[in-house]
Length: 594
Image 1 (cartoon, rainbow, N blue to C red):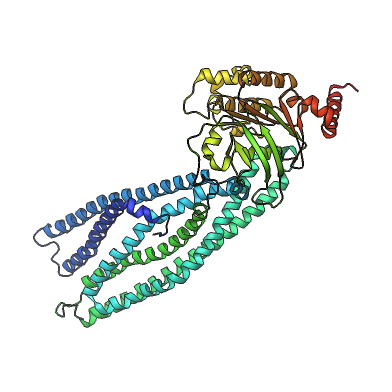
Image 2: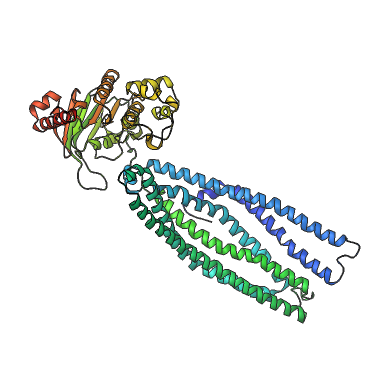
């Protein structure tokens, strides 16, 4: 069984299942020990030629006793398996809920450090091991204690000398268990880490299979996989070897003891030794009964060895899971949060500088910018200028210094972060879509599917006509990450998902780059119509995307190098003018006008 701050509460929560399972198990163990006693009586009856006296009444009586014991054991085993194993499954489910809830609360920095495949190992492999500890582990410890003590007590009653001798292997197992568990825990940790690496590599390769094929890297990736798989195999073999050594050592020890028991018991029968009461003579039936009790005692001894193995695995897996559960939640509301506040969309940056937690270099520095409520603002600049970082800080996925970013005059660090995010419609640069229907993807922000609103959002993002051309239309199931759609269709579905929220602030992060100029103009025209009085921020690479907006912000190496309309920047900003010239040349080359 496991103990720790994340699992102790389950003993309290499911105490009635643990208790009921233990009672069923004790019932089975108690009646299980009746069988050697019946066998001993049968052998003595056979020896005295009295088993079939008075007809077959005695033989029939013993048969009925064995049958009755079997029926009780059948009911008891069903009872403890249903309660104890069921309890383990419930705890696994509860712990997985806790883990998932914590995962949703962790910041972006955590997911940069931990890859998807590795995290899946925690949710599957590690939690299954914890579940076995609660289920199988409970059975092992109850069975080992009760059945072992009861069987040993009956052995003492038959011959305390032989019982004392039989105690030797049990004591050796108990002493050795403390050393063995530490070794097995280390081996199991290495095994789980190797599995995590393998899972992560496989997940990344399957997600990027099209890239692997496009660059003809199948052979190279196969060799890398073989190397990682070999490491996983070696780690598993090392763990299995120590498990086998433990089992073989216990088996050899117990077999040797059984052989010696047969010798000593035979000697006791020959010399006519007395039993514990000092009167009854030790006979062949008692010898059979005692050896049967010891064979029954073998299971508790094996249970101890299995418990050592299981506890080592469970503690290793629980320590891995605890690392996630112990991870500090960094994105949370401050103590003086302003909860009674409706966001309208006025955004102001005041001398804002920002660096990501894993870096000391400022991505944005000394930003001063005022975006008025209802303005259409374009953010433009070369790759790496810091455009997408605007999204990260506005969505409050990272903590900022106080008094650097204000929404409607209130420091963003004093606003409930969920309210901030709920007031923003966000179209990410990677246009992530779920493996679900198109309608469910568009209505992701809501619990219900209002087809009228879904179609309206799709029309505004100019993707409705594409959707109705599909066989299942809005019920079309998308592949992983929306792979069944083209790049432009994915972008427009992602835009529709943001538009259906009708948010006070809308952020499009390079979200029309994959569509043609005509479609881009149609989408921007629709946005102008429906977004009157609401703040819209469009991050782009193309001048054509932002040239007609109210304000354009030019970024260069994390700093603002120009603010104004398209005409103002052309007339006053050399860098912007050069950007316009280069993009005009690109369009001419692409159009063949050169």
